[in-house]
Length: 462
Image 1 (cartoon, rainbow, N blue to C red):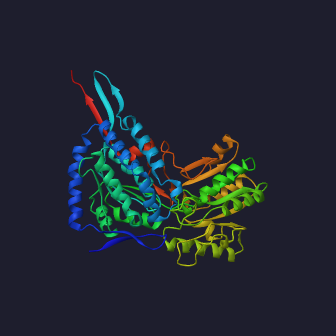
Image 2: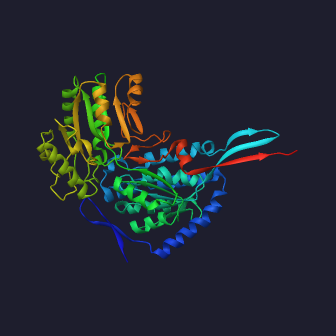
Image 3: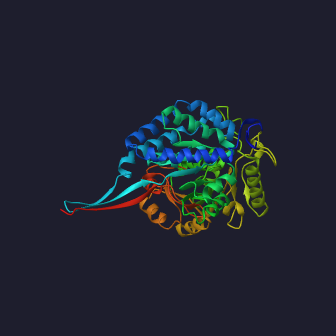
């Protein structure tokens, strides 16, 4: 029987291993989901909300345990408290807006006729979650899908399989009816079969562009809904009127939190010429204060990357940029845990004298490296920010809100931030353009993606 192993990036130890479900077990799970969904859709929205909030309580009761477990699985330092803060924020917001978001749109209500557009659940939703934020990304669709009346099957990433089990145990503790939520350990081939045969009604996937293409290919011709959040190369622009200290503090965090393994992390920065040198000096000094060490230690601010191949990619991009003329500002010797090829341990790096001929400024790095360029004006910054195959978020650092709104309208991206970055607001739709994918999650629009509209034209004859 084939098994999936979780190998800790800290020391290479085996955290856990789980067998793949058999095809027979998968078919049985689909049968349970279909049967359970029909009954679940008839449960009032208020009761569905209450059960999801009870699940949240069960998760929060394990917060400390989950934080340590997550550090062991993928390396994020325990000092940051895991993912339950954002998990709770998103769950509570989607629970709060559910009655309004799922309410029918009344077009006419008169003695002669009633016309309305209702929102109905899609059926069975498959959520394919990534390893970098296994709780936060999954909750974006798991909770609203359930509240909307769907059944959900969760496929957790191999690196963070235990997160799926935590979801299952929390829903069981909450009293969710059997079959409404199921966590399954699936192979790529089994996942593709679910889509090709229309065994599910909608799939949400967070991961690589290559993975997104595989999902779209598998679903082609099935006419099921597909939501994709894929790669990112998120830029920041620091204007001449920015609060320099605020920008430095937040952009360093935006670039290096989670060892740079964030879909909306900052990977390239454009700075007004008048601020460039001071910005770089402050950015490097702040970066050098990071502590690369055991993520289970409270003093650690930077853990290992989750996988050695990801660290090697960043090493290759950085080395290629330096060969092409970039300047590396951080001496890796300042970080004793920094390793060589094949190691998950990687020191943060800040590059200047970079340009868009370099892969580090064009291709997704997904690690602790950032390139910084000086720009002459807003037009130059916008042109460079848009010079990317991706479009998830972009951040503007300025004291002028009107200017930020005007510049944001010119950016080809799903979200525009002003004076913040690397954050997901559940009241705003989470979406992307270009190779970042398609679809939408969270906010009122997130519920629309997890339901189908149904029109009613009810005419009286008396």
